Length: 385
Image (tube, rainbow, N blue to C red):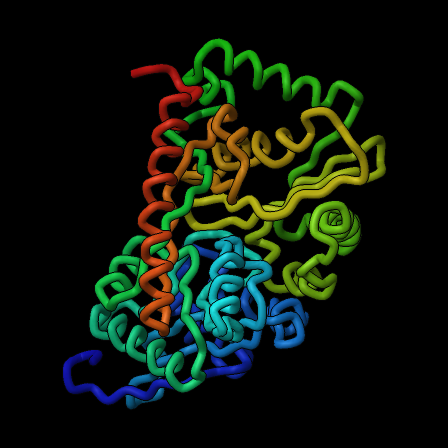
């Protein structure tokens, strides 16, 4: 347990608003905006992540005998697998065909956000290993008390994944695409590291994206207004209408994001004359720019690449950020300088027979992920050597 003989109290919190913002953020750390109190509570308060949408908050917190928060886990009781980006629909169908009940399940993740970040969040300065162990023990006890089929920890850091694996969790590998800043002074400086053909292709795409007279703005902080968010929310809705049918995030969420986190937002808006026609939402970490959502009200050649990938690189170079995380899927990102990076999730399956089946699947899947990453690395757009 933390600090040897220190007494601690473990609780479940169904409303993050009852936890002091500074206390939560002391455990979450400043690096990743998605695990901040502002972001997670905005999801809850806006009814984007709530029981009616299949996300019942069950956050795990640990306090010492002085009432100080020393550890926390963002945790939800899930009634479905929507908005997770680590797909387990096949597991659910298989378990239910065998007569089991897969839902509800427990999930530690950031709703609707496929971004790696801390899940076993420990306040620095104390017995960090002991607190992490206490958090894992708490998760196992919550799983037992709820009587659920499984507990999942999605997009965990490698450190958290290692600790969970030591505790008996099954580890699943995935991949994303990240751009890494090698101290570039400009976008052209970055292009100079690419092969000639790839360099010419990107320059051509950037030119074609704005050939029709489109104007692009990057907005952050007090430059953001509610009219900007109105325009972006329309694009966000249209994207979900075309692809998935139901937008996860409410308009209220974006209003709260403006109020609480506008200095950590970088919104790309594209204008045709003075009319917004497309947008891309990014969040700013201490070392990373995180690409999140994109939408447009029409088809514009190469504009998606410009607004989501190239504008993000420009901004990261300008702010001297170490990397851009462009999210899941899309091998086309590799040819634009975003290389594959391994991601981790951890899974506790209660039923022994079902656990064995999932473990066999994960062994084969990890091999496939490794093969794909090796292939993509071999086809990197960067100059050899």
